[in-house]
Length: 132
Image (cartoon, rainbow, N blue to C red):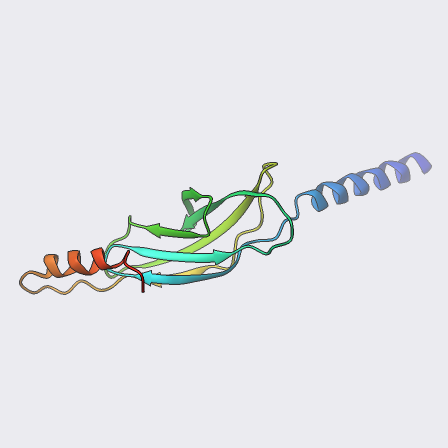
């Protein structure tokens, strides 16, 4: 009986230590910076809590699409008139990862069929990277 209680106590202690070691803050304030026909730029913040962040993983619709060391990302793999859901997690220099950020749902501009609409969309997308 004592042996079983000691084993259970040890198991809970190890589980608690492992869980505490993996706890790092998730990126916060994920928001849309700009969207056009074929580009979406998102940005986020990471709390200045002293954690050494090696980078971030960016997810679109639940699948990892990129990694970045910056807190801003431009997705050029989108199509006009479609909704996308983004989330981000942080990875420490030690390889630990955070929970995912709160999701952000974004829609690209709808494509309208008129003469020379492709040129208009191209110009608008080229303006995407200019300062606001």
